[in-house]
Amino acid sequence: MTLTRLWAALAVVLPVVAALAATLSAVDLAYHLRAGDQILSGGGIPRVDTFTFTAAGREWVDQQWGAQVILAAAYRLGGWIGLVVLRAALVGLLFGLLFLACRLRGADVRSAAWLSLAAFIVAAPALAMRPQLLGMVLLAMTLVLVAVRRAHPRLFYLVPVVVSLWANVHGSFFLGTLVVGLAWLEDLHQRAPAASRTLIVAVVATLATLLNPFGPAVWAYAVGLSMNPEVTARISEWQPTTLRTIPGIVFFASALAVVVILARRGRPTTWPTLAWLGVFFVAGAYAMRGVAWWPLGAAFALAGVLGNTVAPPERPPAAIARRINVGIVAALVVAGIVLFPMWRAADPVLGAPTGVLTDAPSGVTAALRATVRPGDRLFNPQPWGSWFEFAIPSLPVAIDSRIELFPVQTWDEFESIASGRDGWEAVLERWHVTIAVISANDGALAARFAALGWERLFGDGAGQLFVAPGR
Image (cartoon, rainbow, N blue to C red; front, top):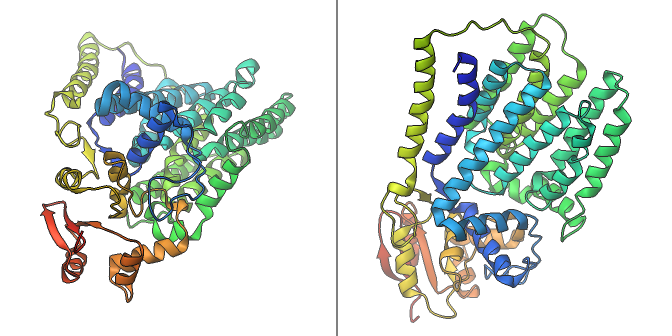
């Protein structure tokens, strides 16, 4: 176990241990589980909304149906623990593939490990258990195939297969075509004889995105979501990345580090490398969601630069150094076992080990289950919408995480209730809301419901439950 091999092991083991220790957020995950369970139960891919009462019957381009099936299958097999294991496996696969891509790009073992670990630090906030994580794995897989396009062209022909799967998993599938396009620019710059083959694969990969249940509509979904002014105005992760958040600070710091690395080389950087970095930097700066892609693309681009340098030979380590290196890896493995949530007591309401699931209020959920009747409609905080529609499928909610699904009028009316604007009582009555869940942080909204004569049935540190007068 040399120091170089230790770094290579850390590039995969550290992200896996972190994934085992991290919590699962129900904000997006829960509605994906419900949709995936519907598909696995023979209900087919959802085409219209049936989860909410504000968008009921509205067309739903469920482009992420493939990821939903994977998530629901993992949940059926192992519950919340199964999802923890799946996320850890995907995170390990992601950074293992990135390490491999950097090595194939020309970086030595230590440089590839450092790039992978740096990418993990920057991408860590984006590694939640949701379809985007599967998209990140598919991007890393595409980078590996791009790296071997000249040495192993037959493997390169698998890119359209990967992209076709990607188009059924996450809206970032267009990055597959973009990456091959950047590879084609490299081939042109280097006058590679296989440049035409790279271009053909890019075209076929683009056509392969149409192999999905919705056809070209997935492109409208992907582009429309990122360009939708209502989404970008209301949802923080779709707003431009700024230095006012920790992930934003890390993103811009990593970009500055890339500039320093390139400047210290002492020779000009080729324009294809700058194109790689520029495209992924723009993706990260455009929106917080884009920060997930920047470190993967940047690590791959830098690996090509670092691959032009000769790494100094490594001396064989002394026996004590080998034992220390092995001990470090063993300690991380033990930490992963200790942090594995299977050892924790389960929350009887959530069905998850204590502390694993967030954005899923246990007390409010139990009170709702004891209160709900046929015909009820729930006004809810937006972050909890997905959880309630998963935990209590018979209860339609007002709003959930599918931001693009709701028209502007619905958002305006929802916010009029939440903020107490003039006419909010009329909106509440027109929506026929019978139950309201209010976050404990929103005492003003709770007071307005109480003033209308709504009865408070439950309250704890997470939220309060009200029912309409005369219900």
